[in-house]
Structure formats: structure tokens, C-alpha cells
Image (cartoon, rainbow, N blue to C red; front, side, top):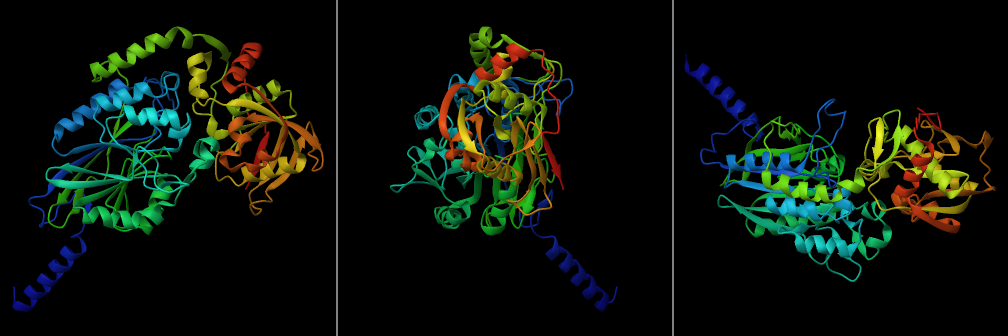
Length: 512
């Protein structure tokens, strides 16, 4: 090979190395012979699911999840890198099932303590039981609760909650900064957070990232309860974040998402997965130089032969046996699977809205789609199933609204920026080709057009009645009457009408 050829070849090889010398999945650069190994184990949005459960969208004939099973996976993964593993939660861990709700999250905290979680960011549902319950959970936890973007109206942060924590693994300091969705005031009972402001994460993180770097952090992790889309935007706006461990959107992220120099991960919901991200970090540059490009989630399947943690199994079993007699009680029967739909009419939404309307003796019934938290298979419906379906401690509220206000509610629902309102007693046609705010093409009650100046009795739940999910026209209602809990209302409805066979009846039609 002549000298010119050698120079050309050298230039090509140099350009190739330059192009691929950054952090890429499954690669390792020449600068990292002494790279430190770090394993990030993570969960999010457990919502109290410490018992195995059935989800036909994940496994047709096998139960998934269960604390004894995901605990065993965590222990196994930690054993592979005992000196370099951290365990994190991205929030919404407690509210959601009978075994957790009745005991205000105590079983979940005990399990998290046993598994030695290192930190947890607050999720919006951590406020659902009020601040006293949150304080008790924080006092019981042997790990810090985090949220850097919460401020009290009088100044300062939320008591007992840290903005960040510094962890040391293998001689390297790791900063974990927590952030929570700014939408929290609309996603929990407003009275529980009335003295708090929830700032935009992008406004508080730049200074914090610089602060923890000055304090020696070699790696910066943002523990986020924002949702995947918001995490991506955050990575675009804020530099210096190495990893975002996400939650809130219940997204199954089996391949790390990379935005600029930030990796984004999330582990679904309800304990069906444990996230396990293995990193190689250059101790000199403090950069991630290698990470797996796929298979960063460990499915949790409740098979008899699957490994389980005996201590966690005993703990869950003790609580389960204490509650079993009441929650095994059958309250009704359905001849069809009760299935949710986030952005459309659903048969279970119709069932619940019908029960609300009947209990309130109202013209119209409304239920927020986000308050329906599970699908139930056909067959007997137990009290446990009802708690899983409707975990929030809402009560039914009946009020008088003008037709104009009802139309405003329907327009907000038609923006499809959140789970839409499920309805009873009326039908609505949305035309999504129209601008937001004018998408209700037709709304009718018993075959007659909704009158803008007419008055209607409307039944809903107290979360919506207080303006939750941004449905603020409910706050203008008059002649309010508070009734029974939503679960009791649906239980009574099932007892009266079972076997039920709710169907999608074109109550909500969406034209695109």
C-alpha cells in the first residue's frame, strides 16, 4: 500500500471512529477500559398491586405481577451487581387496590423497605388520601421521597420531601432529582394541594443539575412522574441529565429512548415489569459509554415455578388473609368483560355512569375515564374487583347545571387531552375536524337537543364536582346534594340489575 493510500485509509478510519465514538447501545469506546458498571432497577405506578392479577392484554391465561414475584426479580438483578445497583420508584405506588387502600399504603411501604428502595419521586396519586396520610407514609419509609418542583405558598418546599438525594455506588456519586407533573392539582382532590404550587420541571432543573454537579455528582438521574412525552420534551429543554427514570403514563419502554444525550426509561405499571438498565460509565469523563439497546424490562409472571421472595409472600399473605372474607363477597355478575377505553365510550364507563345517574335521580350522569382503573373479566364481581375498578374514595354528587354549562363540559371532554367523560342519559357527537372548543356537533337528551338555557340535574363524583381533570364548569353547579360513595352506588346497582351486560351504544360518537 503506497503512502497516499495509507493516508486515505487513516482518514477514513479516523472519521469512522469520530462518528461512532459517542454513547451507543451495546458499544464500548477505547477510552473506557476502567468503566464503572451501574444498574438502575426501577418501578413506577404500582398503584397498590401487591397481589398477582389478570390482564388479558398482557397474558391471556396467566396472572402477572405480584410483590413476591417482582421482589425476587429485584433481588436477582441486584445480586449480579451488588455494589453498583440502585433501586428507584417513579411514583404512584400506593393508591389503587383494596389491600393497599384500606391500609393507606402500609403494605407497599413495608415491601419497599424490605427491598431497600433508594428513592421515590412523588406521583399525583400520593396526595389522594390527604397530607396526613402522605406524612405517615414518608415517616414509615426508610428512603427519601423526592419532588424538586413543589413549593408551598408561603415559601420553601413540602415538609418531609427532598428535591434530590446523592447516592454513592462504586466510588461514584449519583444525583437523583425528583419531579412531579404540574397537572397534579387537577389530578387529585384540589383541597389536598391547595397551598402548593407545582412548577414546570424545566424551570427548576437547570440550576439543580448544575448544583449537584458542583457537589460531585458523576451521573445525574431525574426521577420523573411526568409521562413519556413530557420526559422527551424535558430532555430536549434541559441539558446535563444522563437518565430520566419515568412514570405517570404507564408506558412499557422496552428499548431506552435517547433524546440528545439523555436516556429515558419507564416500566409500564401495576408491577407487571421491573426495569433493569445496565450502564457503563467512564469515571474520568463521567459519561455513559455503553448501555443495552433493548430488553431493559423484566416481565413479572405469577407462575408457580417462578422464583418468589418468601418474606414478601408472607407479608402479603398476612394482609390478604385479614381482608379476604369481606373482599371475596360477590356483589354482582357480568355476562361480558368490562373493558375501559381511554378516548372513547366504553361498556364499563356506561355501567358506572348509569349507576351514578340512577343513584342521583338525575337527568345526566358523568364519570371521568381516568377514575376507572381496571378491566374486569366476565363472571362474578367481588368487592375486591370493585375496589380495583374504582379505587378512589369518591362520593356521588348531584347538582343543577344549565345546558350551556353541560355543553362546556362536553367541549372540554372533546379536546381529548385527557380521558374523556363517560356519559349516561345523553348522547354526543364530536367532530374532531373542528377547532377545540367547537367540537360538539350534536348533544341530545332522550332524543331531544340539549337546551342551552334549560336546567338539568347532573350526577357525578366529587373529584369532578371540584373541577378535577380541568372540568371546571362543574364548580358552577347549584343545589348540591352529596350521596353515597361511588363504590357503594355501583355495588347497589349491580345487586339490583345483575347479571349486567353493558354495551357500547353510540352514546359517544367521534368523527375525525
